[in-house]
Image (tube, rainbow, N blue to C red; front, side, top):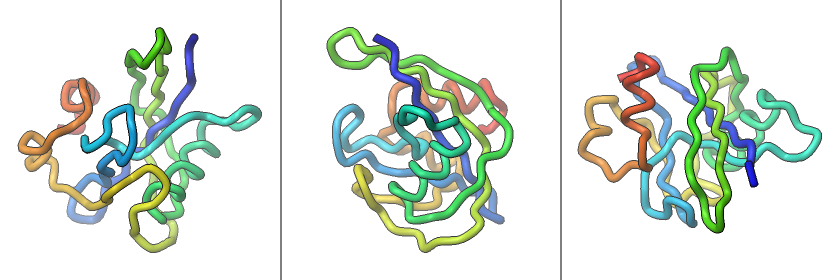
Length: 129
């Protein structure tokens, strides 16, 4: 079974990336781009806005698609993750939903953090690191 997911790649004025530490499986305890499953009847930009609001407290608008990856999940599930550049338009930064922590992280510090499998490779491939 394939599950469509989205992620929002957000940078602040200092070039830091908005990252969440996952509070639940898959990836519990690991840092990642905020995002999650696309709900039935929802398009990708709406899913990016909803997921980032739920996980980070920030209101965002999705811009262009940056790239896609596939990740294996439990019981044969394949997560199809479509990552979009996004811009903050409001809200207050706070961890919510399945995020145990949220913060702005300088790109050079990502290599020293426990991150989800393939994240650094994808960010390098897409020219973000």
